[in-house]
Length: 444
Image (cartoon, rainbow, N blue to C red; front, side, top):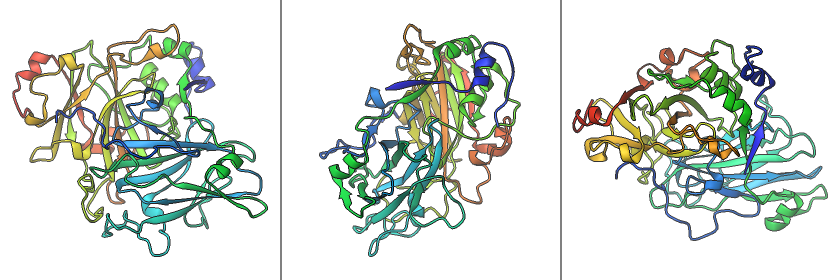
C-alpha cells in the first residue's frame, strides 16, 4: 500500500550534506459514525480511508473525515459525470491529483449547483435535512481553467491516456449518520465517443477503474534516516506552515527554513485546507499540553436544522497526533469535540495512554490525544526502527471566511505563523505527569 518516492533531488543532496536549496467521553478518538448496513465502496470508489483500517491509514488523514479514492483512465473522446446527493454532513468535496500526489483541482459543496427541484444544504439558511439534495458534476479532461470555467466542473489535470486520481471527502457526518453522511457514493456515468451512456460496472470496465485503494507516498528510507540524525523536536516547539514535502524536510530536520517556497502540499492534501505542524519528543518530558483558541465554525454534528456559516471564521478546525514517517494518524479532535472555557480557549493533552494525567479528562474540560507508541513509524520501512518518542502535531484550517485574516491560508513565508495566526496559534508546553496533575481540574 505504500510507494517510495524521490521527494526532490535537491533534498537528497541536502541529506548528503552536498548543497543547500530552496523550492519555488474521554476525548479518545472514536468513530464519528455508526457502521453502515450497505457497502462502503463500489467499482469506482475505493475505501473508506479511515483510522480503523491499517491499510488506508496514511497521508495524515483526519479522523473527523472519511475519504474515498477513484483511479481510472478516460477513454479518448468520452465524457464523464458524477451524479450524487449532498451528504448530511459539515462538508464534502472532490479533489483531483497530479502524479506527485499534490492536488490539481477541486470542487466543494457550496460551489455546486443542485439539480432541478433540489437544494444545496451547504448554502447559508438552507434546510440541512431537505430530502431533495441531488447534484451532477462534470469531470473534464486536462488542466483547470480559471476564466470562463463551466459550473459544476472539476478538471482531472491528466495527460491523454494517463490515469486520473480523485478523492471524495465527507467531513463530520451528522450524529447517527454513517461515514458517507447518510447518502450513497456519487455514481459514475460515462458517455462514450459513440454516444453510448454507461453506468455501474459497465462504466467502470470502460474506464479501467482501479479496484484497489491507492498507495501512500513515502520518502526514501535512506534519505529519512540521514535527515533524522538531526532531531527536529525543540524544547520550545515551533509551529510551521506546510508548503511542500521538500520544504518540510529541509526545514524540520536541517533548520533550513529561510527560503521562498511555493505552496504545493502533497500527500493527497485537500485544496480547501491548509496546515501547520509541530514536532514533539517525549524524551524532553512525557506530557505535551496544547493551549489555544479555536476560530468559530458552523455547528452541524448534532443535526442542526439550518446551515449557518455567515458568522463563522472557518468551516472546520482540527488537531491530530501523527507518525511523521508512516503518515499514520493516532488520534484527532475536531472543533465540536473540544471543550472550551468562558474565553473560548481549550487545553489538550497528548501522551502515551499509560502516562495520561488523571486530570486530562472531559470532566476537567481537557481534551486528550493518544501518542503513538511507534513514534515516527519508521519501522514501516524494511529493516528500520521507530524513533519511539517522536510525535507530529497537525492542525487544519478549512475554508476561511473572506474577512478572517488569522487563517493558516494567509501565511506567506516561513516564520510568519505567529504574526498571521495571532491568538489562534496554540502554545505547546512540556510537563511531567506530576507537574500537570498538580494543576488540578480545569487548569489554565
